[in-house]
Length: 401
Image 1 (cartoon, rainbow, N blue to C red):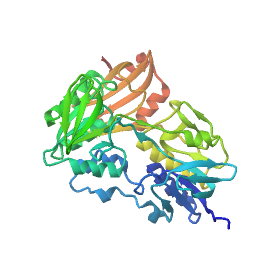
Image 2 (spheres, one colour; image 1 turned 120 degrees about the horizontal axis):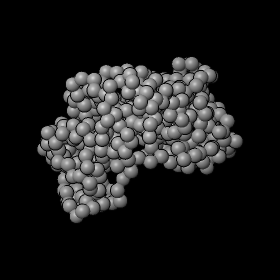
Image 3 (spheres, rainbow, N blue to C red; image 1 turned 90 degrees about the vertical axis):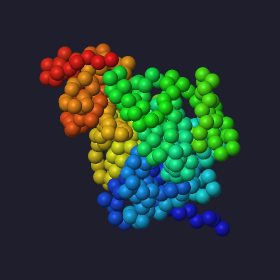
Image 4 (cartoon, one colour; image 1 turned 30 degrees about the horizontal axis):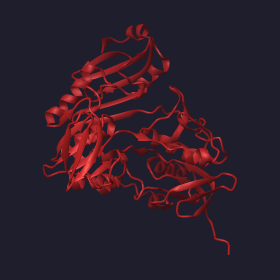
């Protein structure tokens, strides 16, 4: 007897914020078409940024508040804790790691990224923060004055360190640079940023890397590359993420150095397959072809691609903004934001700045620090690609290092 294969008009591989918004986009156009979601996560789609931000600092915001209830809200079917291992474009089917096969009319790949980790024995006290379950595990070994070691100088490391110190936890933060975000911010801003951490009581280990860890009873012992040993109730890693494009490439989809290649409609090189979020190499209208591992890009590309799959024709014109907020500082940026570039600052008021980044003489990136300037206005400035001299004619700039 031939095994019956479930078929969906729209099938989505991935269960993150891009997938949630893709379903919303589909349902805004097509109220009846069947939607299937296959996710490797153990939880339905949720607001991922809250895992390292709001859940730690807002006592009125709770774990369940981050859940989107995607399947129920949009009448979609979802299968969790399942990995798609093969896409067969000719048959319009996908296969999963448990041997199931599903058929689609239209397929969306939105598999996101995976957190990097360190080699060592698996433990619920060593967490590379990415998922809701990771967050819940950190909750178990933090608080009540316990000591937690955080490794990482990026978004996750800096945010979770700030969140933990504000949740009755002693924190040691290990970073590879001279200061927090010293590779992105000019010195005067990275110093301001780090001062918040030091005043909060965080111990920072500069120019260090975690080389290995061991489990010692109910604690974790972390060995740094200079011989320093730290010991605490848990270890949280925020050392970056990686994206696996093998599912797409093995299915014959075009892939480049940025990811799965899509056009302005976020369609891949293979008929009836779209892609969104972290994994795509897309033609940004301001920055050119690139990838973007930012939540706002996941949300916007997901919503856009859902509508496209349901029959709307348009052009993806969102330039991703990456952002963070810790303590009383919030910042947003887009383009190339790298402290190795020429940097000029515009002072807007008390601790409010715009920093402009130039490659040689041409504007390539902008950082908004605690400012109220509308991002669309700043994007319009970047789109014009002014030189330092041209921008200085209309804005009072000062060179910064």
